[in-house]
Image 1 (cartoon, rainbow, N blue to C red):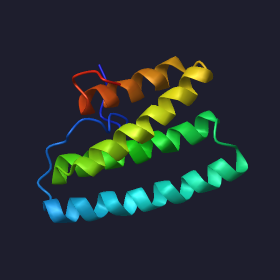
Image 2 (cartoon, one colour):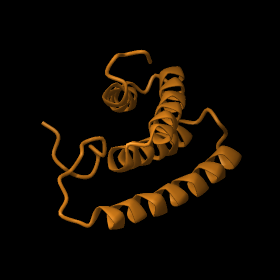
Image 3 (cartoon, rainbow, N blue to C red):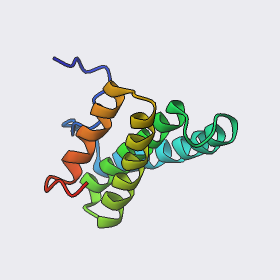
Image 4 (cartoon, rainbow, N blue to C red):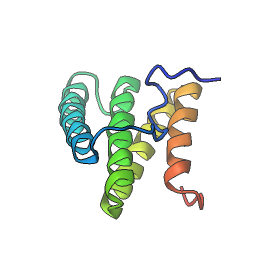
Length: 114
């Protein structure tokens, strides 16, 4: 079993927080992730597994926003970022990380058109 150490970000955690407040938090996180992404792409390159980790986080942030707002653009952004991450994980044979990112993708796209 997965213990909830914040790793299973894909899961919708039932939260008593005000949705608006949660939304703000996710948007702030998204900003930070995107900054981190630019830094890693510059320093480590586009194809680095650590870059993929940030892509995955960006994807998951969009996924949360999609669940909160049901806006299709967030779903598309989430899938785009997660697919990029998956590609890098595949090229680097990071199976565990690939499985995780794939799990998130499947949740977004149950029809499996990924």
